[in-house]
Length: 362
Image (cartoon, rainbow, N blue to C red; front, side, top):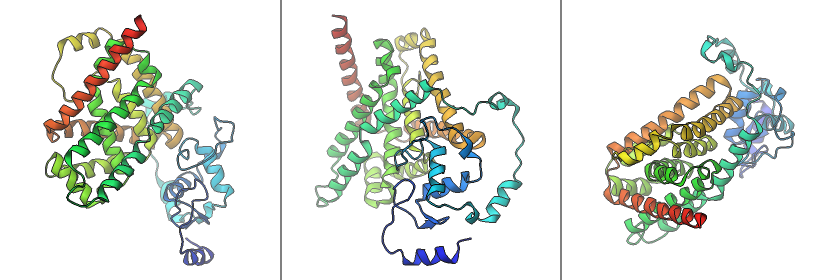
């Protein structure tokens, strides 16, 4: 229960506060410290979980920001206590409820009982590479700026289909850069690289368009929702909103899943190309090895951040989000202009790969 002192503090705050943990916009004083909703919920979950006893993998000197706050849970919790968050202010009923829950231990994951050290150094490096390479593309900032500019124009000239499709195309091209810079993708034979780009670029683009729309709260803008319906068919904005609500709030997980999707032998609704299938079928170990590396890293990261129970739930939710997106593409996004655009971008990237391969062989 909030103390009288905290209530008075809240009444006096008439201007935006910065979260004293990560620097995001604070949503009031929570547990005696100005904090955003993310840090508030983080402290509620972990204040009494024993997380402080876990070892930081970066020497205990992590800088907690809005971008990095989900990288190191022990350092984040340590900072929560340092700025004055008080676990005694967590509602007693909440703690009592949590203490009354007794889940049966699943024997199928008993082998993980001692696996709390989480990621190896190589896995941390892979995770860092994925996050940093994705963030370097500035997709969210560019998309916000684009639509801000479009919606500032007079109604008659704003959000023309040609401009929107061109911008969507630039997102797909940018995601190709993200994929290409992954060392695991670069290590593959060019023949396999080309097949994967052809098969999976469309799915990754659609998945990230949904993620970006959610991150920028685009569906709260009625004009944006109407634009989606006009371009992709009536009702598509409603389906997209429902799908975006199921996406995990941790953007790092979306970035990991995105890079994992590129190594799928089939992550979209496609017409069968028997020659491509032969290449995939006769090279299964190449993709399986890479998929195992990424999935193992993802699983350990989930356990590191959330523990076994919540880690499993989030993993299942991530898989379901991808499957929902593939089904939505097959059922509703039957817009020839969109897929022609995606196909043209894929062909352009395939030519680029062929050119690079030719130069490397000279």
